[in-house]
Image (cartoon, rainbow, N blue to C red; front, side, top):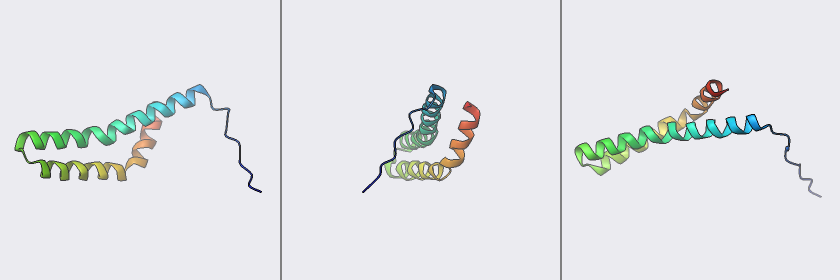
Amino acid sequence: MIKLHRKKADISGETLINTVWVSTFLALVLTVPALGLFLGIYFSTGNLLVGAIVGFGLHFVTLAFSDRISKKLTLILS
């Protein structure tokens, strides 16, 4: 027989709000610089392919450091 664990129901409101803010800022840090660089290259040179490659490259580099960024954001917002 499979035993399913109950979810924690005693999460404080402060922890929940902090989690939402950290997640929101992390999403912004991961997407806005890459999108800005992509649009900047595209509108200044008109080359969609170069803008996409550089934008995706920056996005995945920041994604590789997302654990460190998340820990720093948690420290700042706590």
